[in-house]
Length: 126
Image 1 (tube, rainbow, N blue to C red):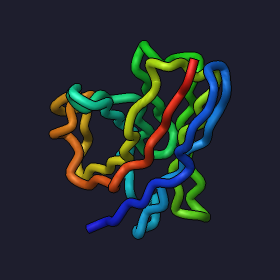
Image 2 (cartoon, rainbow, N blue to C red; image 1 turned 90 degrees about the vertical axis):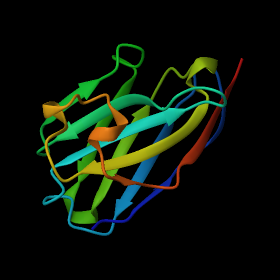
Image 3 (cartoon, rainbow, N blue to C red; image 1 turned 180 degrees about the vertical axis):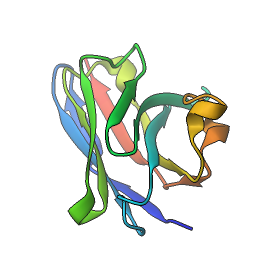
C-alpha cells in the first residue's frame, strides 16, 4: 500500500509555470511505476506523464517539451514541472502509482495504476 498526497497546484496566467509535488508514504525508490494524470470537468481522466524505475520518462504529446517529470527519492516525492502553461492545461492533476509495470496494459490507461492521490487543481487563465 502507498498513500499519495499532491500539492503545488494553483492559478497562473498562460505562459507561466507551476511545479506539482506528490509525497508518497512509501520509499519512491521502491515505488517503481509512478505517473501524473489530469481531469477537466466533463472529461475523462487523461494521462500526462510517467516515470518508471526512476529513469524512463514518458510524456503525452500535448505536454511534451513543456512538462518534466522527476523524483527525489530522499524526499519520497514525485514532481511535475509545468512550463509554458496553456488554458487547455486547466484540470485537476492526480498522482498515481502502480505495483506492476503499466507498460503491460498501456501507460496511458488509468486502470494500469492502483494507487491515487486526491488531486491538486491547476487553473490557467488566458
